[in-house]
Image 1 (cartoon, rainbow, N blue to C red):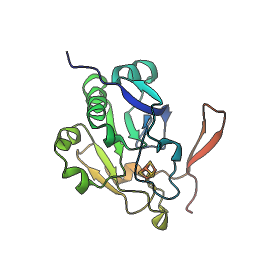
Image 2: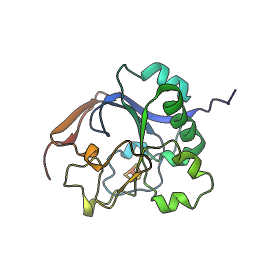
Image 3: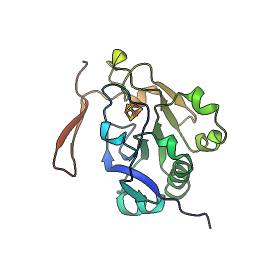
Image 4: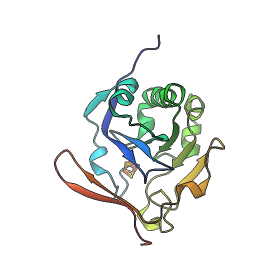
Length: 187
Ligand code: SF4
């Protein structure tokens, strides 16, 4: 049996309707070195151990009925490449979920690294590139800035599935802080 790797996770949203098509579980990885100005999740940048879970533990504890897919964000998921691979593989093979991954690396940067194709095999959609506040998203697509590209590795989705007009969610953090996030209007 394959060794179950522990993933350093910042947080999990069991159900979200603004992080890709349909209702999705969202897993935020911990640790990112990109240091984009005005990063949406600055607390995920720090390289420290927050919560260690195996893929199986994540789905067992947090997967709700009726989820269409898994979205992975961060932090930088590809800095824990083997763990990401196992998470995506488990999502697809064991739970029949679609997969969307946000990364601060570009597709070209990732493609130059050995082993990435094996991860891409379990990704339906990759949204790539660092957040650039000068090109902030204004068309209500589920991405931070327009330099970030959608890469559709399968035929499951197209760009219309990432159009999020009027969708807003409120997240209550472990510290009690309330954050509103979403696509309520064109900025
Ligand atoms: S890549 Fe994402 S998590 Fe990393 S600094 Fe940029 S916006 Fe923040």
